[in-house]
Image (tube, rainbow, N blue to C red; front, side, top):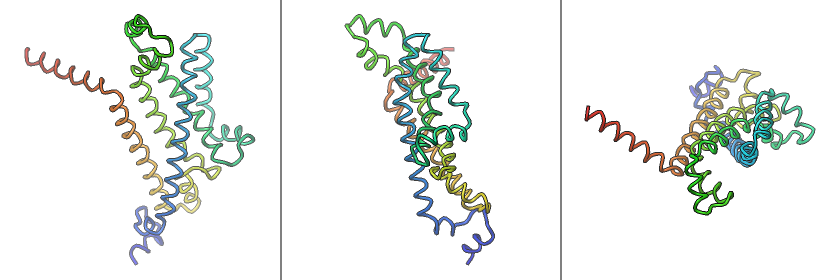
Length: 237
Protein backbone atom coordinates (compact mmCIF):
# COMPACT_ATOMS: atom_id res chain seq x y z
CA UNK A 1 0.00 0.00 0.00
CA UNK A 2 2.85 2.35 0.90
CA UNK A 3 4.48 1.71 -2.46
CA UNK A 4 1.24 2.50 -4.28
CA UNK A 5 0.75 5.63 -2.16
CA UNK A 6 3.98 7.11 -3.45
CA UNK A 7 2.46 7.07 -6.95
CA UNK A 8 -0.71 8.70 -5.68
CA UNK A 9 1.18 11.35 -3.70
CA UNK A 10 3.60 11.88 -6.62
CA UNK A 11 6.78 11.42 -4.59
CA UNK A 12 10.21 11.94 -6.14
CA UNK A 13 11.45 8.55 -4.96
CA UNK A 14 9.00 5.75 -5.62
CA UNK A 15 9.93 2.08 -5.59
CA UNK A 16 6.57 1.09 -7.06
CA UNK A 17 7.28 3.19 -10.14
CA UNK A 18 10.62 1.44 -10.68
CA UNK A 19 8.98 -1.97 -10.31
CA UNK A 20 5.93 -1.31 -12.47
CA UNK A 21 7.78 0.59 -15.23
CA UNK A 22 11.03 -1.40 -15.31
CA UNK A 23 10.53 -2.54 -18.92
CA UNK A 24 9.76 0.98 -20.04
CA UNK A 25 12.92 2.26 -18.37
CA UNK A 26 14.98 -0.55 -19.89
CA UNK A 27 13.68 0.10 -23.41
CA UNK A 28 14.36 3.84 -23.11
CA UNK A 29 17.87 3.20 -21.78
CA UNK A 30 18.69 0.78 -24.61
CA UNK A 31 17.46 3.29 -27.19
CA UNK A 32 19.51 6.03 -25.52
CA UNK A 33 22.68 3.90 -25.59
CA UNK A 34 22.11 2.88 -29.22
CA UNK A 35 21.59 6.43 -30.47
CA UNK A 36 24.60 7.71 -28.52
CA UNK A 37 26.94 4.92 -29.66
CA UNK A 38 25.95 5.18 -33.34
CA UNK A 39 26.23 8.99 -33.30
CA UNK A 40 29.70 9.01 -31.74
CA UNK A 41 30.96 6.22 -34.02
CA UNK A 42 29.80 8.03 -37.16
CA UNK A 43 31.12 11.30 -35.74
CA UNK A 44 34.61 9.83 -35.36
CA UNK A 45 34.46 8.36 -38.89
CA UNK A 46 33.55 11.78 -40.33
CA UNK A 47 35.84 13.87 -38.09
CA UNK A 48 39.02 11.91 -38.83
CA UNK A 49 39.27 12.74 -42.56
CA UNK A 50 38.19 16.32 -41.82
CA UNK A 51 41.03 16.65 -39.30
CA UNK A 52 43.49 15.24 -41.85
CA UNK A 53 42.21 17.74 -44.41
CA UNK A 54 42.57 20.62 -41.95
CA UNK A 55 46.12 19.52 -41.11
CA UNK A 56 47.14 19.29 -44.76
CA UNK A 57 46.82 23.02 -45.44
CA UNK A 58 45.89 26.22 -43.65
CA UNK A 59 43.64 26.91 -46.63
CA UNK A 60 41.44 24.02 -45.50
CA UNK A 61 41.91 24.42 -41.74
CA UNK A 62 39.94 27.66 -41.48
CA UNK A 63 36.82 26.49 -43.35
CA UNK A 64 36.77 23.06 -41.65
CA UNK A 65 37.13 24.42 -38.12
CA UNK A 66 34.82 27.34 -38.85
CA UNK A 67 32.07 25.14 -40.30
CA UNK A 68 32.14 22.64 -37.43
CA UNK A 69 32.03 25.50 -34.92
CA UNK A 70 29.06 27.11 -36.66
CA UNK A 71 27.20 23.78 -36.71
CA UNK A 72 27.70 23.44 -32.95
CA UNK A 73 26.09 26.86 -32.36
CA UNK A 74 22.89 26.03 -34.29
CA UNK A 75 20.00 25.53 -31.82
CA UNK A 76 18.77 21.94 -31.70
CA UNK A 77 15.22 22.81 -32.76
CA UNK A 78 16.53 24.67 -35.80
CA UNK A 79 18.93 21.83 -36.62
CA UNK A 80 16.21 19.20 -36.52
CA UNK A 81 13.87 21.43 -38.55
CA UNK A 82 16.50 21.78 -41.28
CA UNK A 83 17.14 18.03 -41.35
CA UNK A 84 13.45 17.04 -41.16
CA UNK A 85 12.78 17.19 -44.95
CA UNK A 86 15.70 14.81 -45.53
CA UNK A 87 15.10 12.22 -42.82
CA UNK A 88 11.52 12.65 -41.62
CA UNK A 89 10.56 11.75 -38.05
CA UNK A 90 13.14 8.98 -37.70
CA UNK A 91 16.11 7.98 -35.59
CA UNK A 92 18.33 8.99 -38.53
CA UNK A 93 17.22 12.59 -37.98
CA UNK A 94 18.43 12.54 -34.37
CA UNK A 95 21.65 10.66 -35.17
CA UNK A 96 22.57 13.07 -37.97
CA UNK A 97 22.02 16.07 -35.73
CA UNK A 98 24.12 14.55 -32.96
CA UNK A 99 26.91 13.70 -35.42
CA UNK A 100 27.03 17.31 -36.62
CA UNK A 101 27.18 18.56 -33.02
CA UNK A 102 30.04 16.19 -32.17
CA UNK A 103 32.27 17.28 -35.05
CA UNK A 104 33.63 20.47 -33.48
CA UNK A 105 34.92 18.53 -30.45
CA UNK A 106 36.25 15.54 -32.37
CA UNK A 107 37.92 17.44 -35.23
CA UNK A 108 39.72 19.81 -32.90
CA UNK A 109 40.97 17.05 -30.60
CA UNK A 110 42.14 14.80 -33.43
CA UNK A 111 43.89 17.75 -35.06
CA UNK A 112 45.50 18.81 -31.78
CA UNK A 113 46.73 15.25 -31.16
CA UNK A 114 48.26 14.90 -34.63
CA UNK A 115 49.94 18.30 -34.44
CA UNK A 116 51.41 17.46 -31.02
CA UNK A 117 53.36 14.45 -32.38
CA UNK A 118 57.08 15.26 -31.86
CA UNK A 119 58.87 16.26 -35.07
CA UNK A 120 61.82 14.02 -34.19
CA UNK A 121 59.54 10.98 -34.07
CA UNK A 122 58.25 11.72 -37.55
CA UNK A 123 61.72 12.41 -38.91
CA UNK A 124 63.02 9.14 -37.44
CA UNK A 125 60.16 7.22 -39.07
CA UNK A 126 60.80 8.85 -42.44
CA UNK A 127 64.49 7.98 -42.09
CA UNK A 128 63.45 4.34 -41.66
CA UNK A 129 61.57 4.45 -44.94
CA UNK A 130 58.02 5.06 -43.66
CA UNK A 131 55.67 6.48 -46.29
CA UNK A 132 52.88 8.96 -45.46
CA UNK A 133 50.21 6.30 -44.84
CA UNK A 134 52.45 4.10 -42.70
CA UNK A 135 53.73 7.15 -40.81
CA UNK A 136 50.15 8.16 -40.02
CA UNK A 137 48.86 4.76 -38.86
CA UNK A 138 51.96 3.42 -37.10
CA UNK A 139 53.53 6.56 -35.62
CA UNK A 140 51.32 9.65 -35.59
CA UNK A 141 47.97 8.07 -34.73
CA UNK A 142 49.27 6.00 -31.77
CA UNK A 143 51.02 9.08 -30.33
CA UNK A 144 47.85 11.17 -30.87
CA UNK A 145 45.62 8.62 -29.11
CA UNK A 146 45.48 10.44 -25.72
CA UNK A 147 44.09 13.59 -27.34
CA UNK A 148 41.83 11.59 -29.66
CA UNK A 149 40.39 9.55 -26.78
CA UNK A 150 39.90 12.70 -24.72
CA UNK A 151 37.84 14.11 -27.58
CA UNK A 152 35.78 10.93 -27.85
CA UNK A 153 35.11 10.99 -24.11
CA UNK A 154 33.94 14.61 -24.20
CA UNK A 155 31.83 14.00 -27.31
CA UNK A 156 30.26 10.90 -25.77
CA UNK A 157 29.26 12.61 -22.54
CA UNK A 158 27.92 15.56 -24.52
CA UNK A 159 25.98 13.24 -26.84
CA UNK A 160 24.42 11.37 -23.91
CA UNK A 161 22.96 14.68 -22.76
CA UNK A 162 21.96 15.90 -26.23
CA UNK A 163 20.23 12.62 -27.10
CA UNK A 164 17.38 13.64 -24.79
CA UNK A 165 16.54 16.43 -27.26
CA UNK A 166 15.46 13.71 -29.70
CA UNK A 167 12.29 13.41 -27.64
CA UNK A 168 10.77 16.14 -29.82
CA UNK A 169 10.52 13.51 -32.57
CA UNK A 170 9.97 10.56 -30.24
CA UNK A 171 13.55 9.28 -30.56
CA UNK A 172 15.15 10.65 -27.40
CA UNK A 173 15.68 7.53 -25.30
CA UNK A 174 15.37 8.58 -21.69
CA UNK A 175 14.42 12.04 -22.90
CA UNK A 176 11.10 10.56 -24.07
CA UNK A 177 10.25 9.65 -20.49
CA UNK A 178 11.20 13.09 -19.21
CA UNK A 179 9.16 14.77 -21.94
CA UNK A 180 6.13 12.55 -21.25
CA UNK A 181 6.32 13.23 -17.51
CA UNK A 182 6.63 17.02 -17.67
CA UNK A 183 2.99 17.95 -18.52
CA UNK A 184 1.72 16.22 -15.37
CA UNK A 185 5.04 16.72 -13.56
CA UNK A 186 5.33 13.02 -12.73
CA UNK A 187 8.23 13.37 -10.28
CA UNK A 188 9.31 9.73 -10.03
CA UNK A 189 9.59 9.39 -13.81
CA UNK A 190 11.48 12.67 -14.23
CA UNK A 191 13.94 11.74 -11.48
CA UNK A 192 14.47 8.13 -12.62
CA UNK A 193 15.09 9.10 -16.26
CA UNK A 194 17.38 11.98 -15.27
CA UNK A 195 19.45 9.84 -12.89
CA UNK A 196 19.78 7.09 -15.51
CA UNK A 197 20.96 9.67 -18.05
CA UNK A 198 23.65 10.92 -15.65
CA UNK A 199 24.70 7.34 -14.84
CA UNK A 200 25.02 6.55 -18.56
CA UNK A 201 27.34 9.52 -19.03
CA UNK A 202 29.50 8.54 -16.03
CA UNK A 203 29.70 4.86 -17.01
CA UNK A 204 30.50 5.71 -20.64
CA UNK A 205 33.27 8.09 -19.57
CA UNK A 206 34.79 5.51 -17.21
CA UNK A 207 34.66 2.78 -19.88
CA UNK A 208 36.35 5.02 -22.44
CA UNK A 209 38.95 6.03 -19.86
CA UNK A 210 39.68 2.33 -19.34
CA UNK A 211 40.01 1.82 -23.10
CA UNK A 212 42.34 4.81 -23.28
CA UNK A 213 44.57 3.38 -20.55
CA UNK A 214 44.71 0.02 -22.34
CA UNK A 215 45.61 1.63 -25.68
CA UNK A 216 48.21 4.02 -24.24
CA UNK A 217 50.25 2.04 -21.67
CA UNK A 218 53.26 4.31 -22.21
CA UNK A 219 51.41 7.22 -20.57
CA UNK A 220 51.14 5.22 -17.33
CA UNK A 221 54.85 4.36 -17.49
CA UNK A 222 55.68 8.02 -18.04
CA UNK A 223 53.58 9.14 -15.07
CA UNK A 224 55.13 6.45 -12.86
CA UNK A 225 58.62 7.52 -13.88
CA UNK A 226 57.81 11.17 -13.19
CA UNK A 227 56.44 10.26 -9.75
CA UNK A 228 59.59 8.27 -8.95
CA UNK A 229 61.84 11.13 -10.11
CA UNK A 230 59.87 13.62 -8.02
CA UNK A 231 60.04 11.40 -4.95
CA UNK A 232 63.78 10.90 -5.45
CA UNK A 233 64.37 14.63 -5.79
CA UNK A 234 62.34 15.36 -2.65
CA UNK A 235 64.26 12.71 -0.73
CA UNK A 236 67.57 14.17 -1.87
CA UNK A 237 66.55 17.61 -0.64
